[in-house]
Length: 225
Ligand SMILES: [Zn+2]
Image (cartoon, rainbow, N blue to C red; front, side):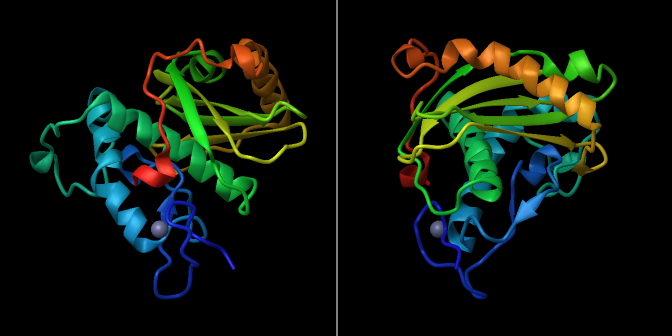
């Protein structure tokens, strides 16, 4: 039985909810019912997800993406948001991805992150405003390292501790926010993208050198939600 990673409530027919891995407000469509309860989902949706949408406002307008939660362009009003809210929303994307794809049983202890654009999407798909999520574990590192790129224009490197020793592995996910679907790419492209991101993340992957990056606030997302 799945549990909500935020409040640890067991999920059942009554309290489960569809959580978008990348917020629907950003054109995310892939979702799971096995990661967040309805209460946590709604709370995050009305706060940090909206903050991230406000942060990405120019990209949403440029690519003509209508957030699902907003009915028409007339309703689009700039929402007040803080850097910390944006960072929490970014951490939530990676957390969603981790629990959806990887390890439903573990817990995330804390996060750290930096805003850093590796320009992966423009390099491989210059015409596409894609979202990219990359997550890797190195054996015995004790840390997971992830990279999120939104619309091919905004990038974040996130590190977090899960309390479990992961095996060497990497996962890549691409979302097409314009057509609201997962972007399926070739195995050859995937291998190249993973290699490229891996190389760039290497400098952020050693445990003690991990945190000269106090660029953006740390967070303990599950407790804050
Ligand atoms: Zn919950």
